[in-house]
Length: 76
View: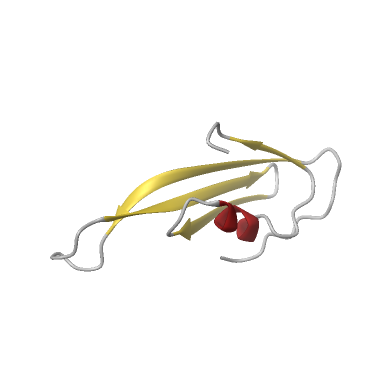
């Protein structure tokens, strides 16, 4: 994952959501669960990231360096 660097703005509100996707490399392989993350920084960026896991480490890596308010789904 890339690093998100947004200048600190106390009025900045980001939005984060994750969607489960099924992934397989070959037709004979079973599908595995993975996740696409969508992070929206209003009037600046819409970022899409992929991770194999839906855990704190994935979120920590995605939000490294982010400062400001964050709106997230109920899973968080």
